[in-house]
Image (cartoon, rainbow, N blue to C red):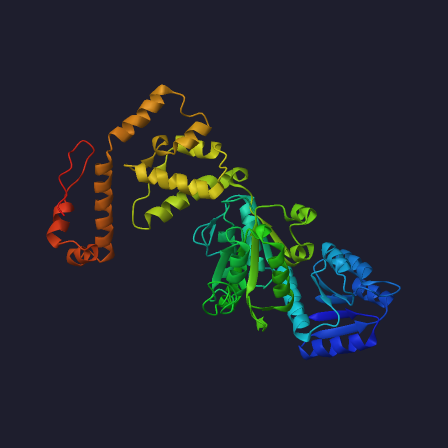
Length: 467
């Protein structure tokens, strides 16, 4: 049973809150005097504390500071009866979990209490990290040999079971959406939908409609009612990528969703309750955006309860080779022989700075696979951009070797080889039944037999197409 400490000068507020929380099954202790609250904070343990900001002689801000010192793992919710929220935001900067304005709505307060207790449990539980990972360094396709990525994986397992909002920081191409999907897959919402929207990719009217939906006739082209992502993601997760690019007008509506758990469609008049966890990501400095007036400070503190940072690939050298091997295996599938990276290629991959991060590494490995004819990936099949960037194309003999490699592999020969590999994969998929394979490939059985036996070599001529 969770223990809750209530501190407010107003006896009526304490009575209402105490009755409400006890009805939810919590053990509640309520006090009106700040001095007594300080004694309790220093001598007893609580899972959650709720303080009124404006109290005398000891106010809620002072109690918050004492709590952070004495019981740093305890969640704190602040109550404020004032229209201005600057003080509440300052409280969140000092470590408060959230704030609720008076007069509060019962549902809003209970949702905040549940989230705060879930967050507290996630941080204090001795979570046993899953041992049955696909490999020693992989969590739902996240390669984590470096300590920073292991920290990200541990954070996912600790925080995913809660509904706490998460803000993922990282340069473009570092895999922010992959991390967001992992948060979803390890949560109790994993059977619900995971819906993502790039806030930088859509103009303001379209983004608003995409997120909140619209009513028929709300604007030109709105020929019918349409659900937005928040409604469509009911019981699941919505991922707002590049949230720093979200227009201010939509930021205010998102803040309302976080506070009230309800949306209003564009052109609509009714509020619609929604139940979707919100994950966000950015590659920009939101604190700087706050200073420049392009991002709301109150929204920032709502979405960044749990900040997660993904380091750029150049700062986690340990991940580069395992990532490259993982990408190759994903590209080839489980049944094809996987070519190995020779030592020179490994050195080149680790020497390159990867400005495009994991996305650029993925493109490089796909390029290498396309041009590799043997069981070893060599430097000659790496993208020229990578070789040039690290000064690996200055030797004329190296350049000639690379040209020779491509001269021995015409486009027609390459296509015939890939055709043969695809036919073999289809045959394997249907259990070796060549007749079924021919049907799947939409060719005759005779054509299949005619194409399969040929072992095409670079120096051989290629017969004319049979079909």
